Length: 357
Image (cartoon, rainbow, N blue to C red):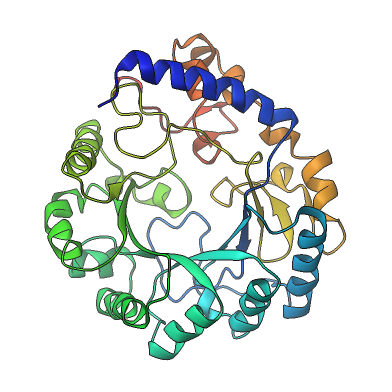
């Protein structure tokens, strides 16, 4: 565990660096939401994906966009992050990502893995997929109920096994969304994943957003949060590849203890996203409101949007709330994550002050 004074020094430097990114952003991660269609119906989905029909970009439009991004930004130090919905529902998936790979982009994907048979696993390898994070949200019965998908656990596990069998990927990760219903299963889940040659297990909390707002009984209690973070920290102390996600300022006791970095919401400074219909925004987890759509790749050049707009994301949210503004941790929290901010009430939906610190 790092000394608190060292952490504070690191976080102070990070705060100054973050301020600089507000004026000179550095695009590193470009998310492509290939579709809002999904073959699962997860209770926590922030995008309300499922059996929906929405406008989607064509293969040719993605290729033109990727050519444009390469010309304007290059491909070095850039990562395409492929998401949905379930991205593999796109019949032209290999055409889009094979082309991205051919022109030099690195890419990774988030998937429920239920569609990854051996043929698709080989396709992903051949298209150059570097990383994948697969969702497993509890033991079989819990997972299937949470994702409203009978047999979902077995299909996802088979998908992971197919990926591991084919090999050639830089990182295969499992992600678990912790809820009040499944937090008691963390030890049992670790016992399962510990026997698998995956590279890491990412443990994250359910967020009070999207469909999760309809199921308040799924949200974690203060005791649940402390249990989850202690679980992650103890596993990491033991040398296990378990980590928390990028969300939320956790206070000096837990910062740098449950993940390899300090809290830093990079929406709009490192991260931009292209929605399924071509709309340009920051992080796809942020509430979908008209003011956050900065343009559309069908009629705007992405480089111009990135450099000349996005101001709505390049500020400290803490300045919009009197309580946050007066908080002694404001310098490090900045109002916390954009995706968990209530833009009507101008306050965070989730704050760990008085829960963890």
